[in-house]
Image 1 (cartoon, rainbow, N blue to C red):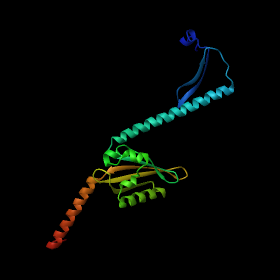
Image 2: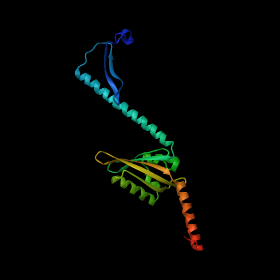
Image 3: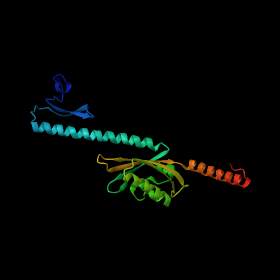
Image 4: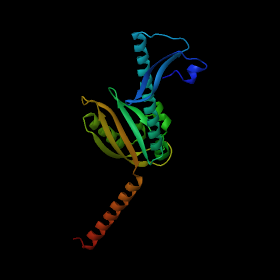
Length: 214
């Protein structure tokens, strides 16, 4: 099969080839091989070692591909009007990831959260911290999805009302692994709700004063 190959007929005059398929998701994408200009006879142990190398290369390529896909997903999220936060549970909840657009949307410094010098709760008022802690405790208790609304008080810029939509993920034994949450700016909706409530209150006072209530 290889006798007419240019690398056999001409320089470097290959005289030995041994290869093991390189597979990703059960699809052969290449070969981990050994080439030499001298003939050899590999032992069973050497063949197993070559297969072992191929397996590890496949795992590395799979991880690299997943990392690339994850970076693409994060890049997509950074261009949306919603910020993403992930917590990992390891005896306690730890911030695992926060999308870069949390700074442009809510004026929260992304680097401070990623470095761990500030916690997300630091930018909430007391009521907001209680709302967030209640939501997270529900996930710890086994609640798969939840939502909450609270105010964000950034170090610079106006306060913002946000809606947080969260989903938790568990291992096969039911233990919490991580929580993913989307933060959506809800400031405009809260403003209109406030104006509507004020208008309703004014209308109720007018009706009560004029005796025209139904």
